[in-house]
Amino acid sequence: MTKLTLLISLAFLSTQALLFSPFVQASDEELTKPVIKKLTKQRKKQLVHMVKQDCGSCHGMTLKGGLGPALLPEDVKDKPLLFLQNTILYGRAGTAMPPWKTILTEQEVLWISKGLQAGAYIEKNDNTASKNEQEVQGNSYEK
Image (cartoon, rainbow, N blue to C red; front, side):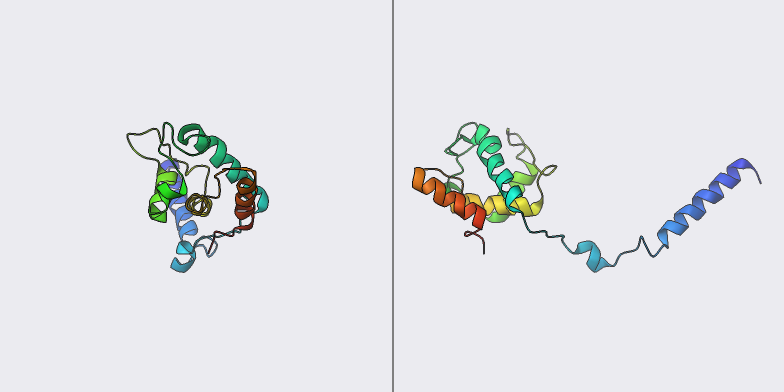
């Protein structure tokens, strides 16, 4: 056998071994089943900080608008959750809205979107700020 024939044979056998290995194969159900982990308090705090700082840098620190549109509850309450999620995950072409899919999971984006609709990140006064912070930490706006 020549070296080329040997290499081709080895490559073919390697791919066959991978394709038919019981460790590689997964059922369709396993492949389509979403992995859902409960968001920790620490991660929720990080997400709140991200909304206030990163989103706030374009949408205004009070989310009343700026370079990007306002994200107040009255502005997003009638928008479908899927619209909000897709906007956050994939950005908006032709605008300054970047995609966040590389650092946020779909579950985290859903949590943020529900929080935006519930007004969980809005600080109107000291009482409202602490109440909203408790809602975010306790998920009182989640179903």
